[in-house]
Length: 348
Image (cartoon, rainbow, N blue to C red; front, side, top):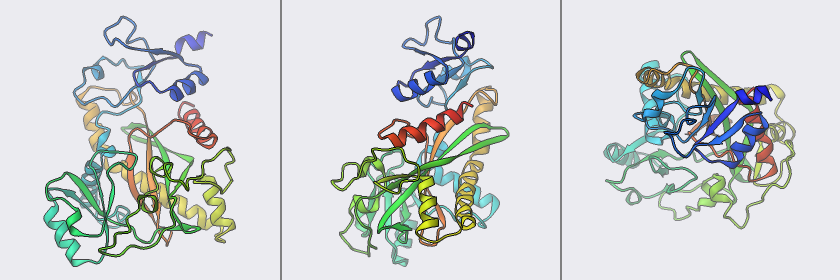
């Protein structure tokens, strides 16, 4: 009871799932409505929405307090800023080992370069809003007139030869927790989620009208609306069933169905972790600068990120995006088990 009194959570991002997980870890939870109240600063851990870099609440943090976001977190969480961040890092360290992010153009500024690339290649592309999630606004581009000259967004070369399972495309949500950027302390969770599309994949050619979101996108928020979505009703980590698997189930599938050795599967996981690590290293300087400007201690912040990876047919991992606020809700027993373990590991 004395320890509980010392562990107080302030919540300004009202997630019932996060509240339950904190209570399981022994936190006394308080929901703060008025940031000027006398008790507003009585906490050990603060679960909040991302704060703007000029938010005055950064400067009210005491040395022993921690918040679940870093200042400037959207350097990784926005698609346009992530693209710029990786491009700068690639110029600094060279091209070797930095070919894990699809060729990308930020629009509208890069429209001319994209148009020339589109004309010179036979590839199809994918257009994404700069700052959105859950698959909102994403479209497959097979014709140049689908891309506006003036609308902000990014356009990327489409990965047209993904690894398929039973004919379906999938991506992998890898969870990474950063507790410091000076030095960088990054923990990559050993399990994750494998999210499937709900329409069998076939390659699309230029000028094609076959742009089904249920075939090309793997987002849970998109595919749960499909009549073919298969919800999970169990928490079996090794079950290769339904439209969502655990990462451990994927490793089992690669070994038992595709005949890969344990060493080969471990190599795929090692390559994925390398992609995640390099992505965060690319933003190290940015986060350290923001922490310094706000006079924060290096241990004042931690953050759980969701990093989306796609494997191509040759088992090469490609970075799709980084999610600043990954969904921690439990839409199925499998989600509850994986995210609960993630949360427990984060606070252990």
